[in-house]
Length: 142
Image (cartoon, rainbow, N blue to C red; front, side, top):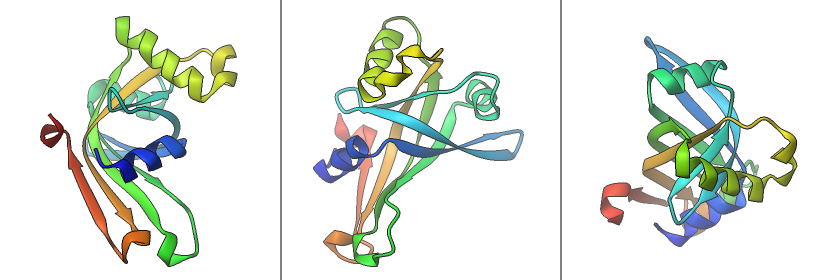
């Protein structure tokens, strides 16, 4: 994965996730922790939220992470697609560690953790030139 993508994913902490169920789309904002070794996002949400229900019924998701700025030359962000699953077993303990390292105050919360495994990420970074894009696909990273 390109170092500019990794830097952006590690630096930010809020993503917008898009889900769909029965042809009804939904978006939600979630705090996330990025694990670069596993190349996954860890988010928390109750399974009875609208996006939690969607996660369970349809594991395909899309999302964005963007720097908000008025300076066009500094615009950067990612769009991604992937799959989401509940964290369980060994993955749950690793996901919890990732999330609590990023958000230590969440130790007091009742966390229901989910793993988002991106399969495609498009980075736009205008600092490299207007509209400059870098593409990553999971199958190309093997």
